[in-house]
Image (cartoon, rainbow, N blue to C red; front, top):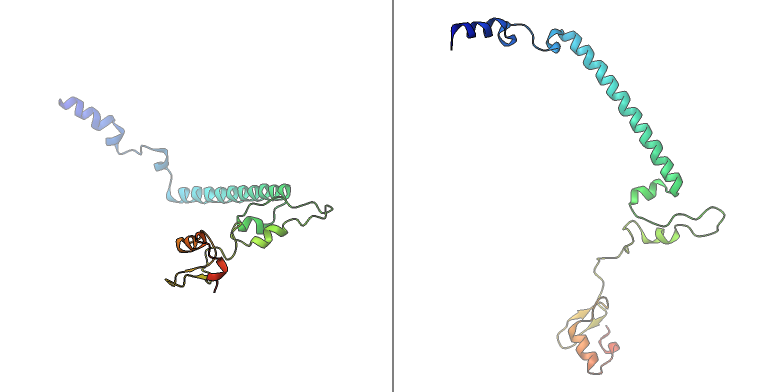
Length: 149
């Protein structure tokens, strides 16, 4: 590398000149802090406005579809409520289902057995498919009441 090229870079290149290379570097710390405070205020105002607009849109949709805050919280889907003059029960059927999204409140719980195999002591609650021992006994002509507890 020749000495002339090196001197050119050192003297005329902004990287070596010691001068600030970006417009932000020309600002003082107090100027930058003031700009940051102004931007923070603009951000907060914009977020507040967007939140208010979103709430207004949600309220409009709730009115349009006849939803209540309880409907939103439960996450369950249901038919729209009847109009005030219809005399229909509205959401009575869905209220009976509870908050489990249409499942019974007792779904998944163990229940007491109703039938017992006298030979093995196996039991059946009466829910679901019949066990093989009971199906075989019924196929032989025995009555379900014979196995009742």
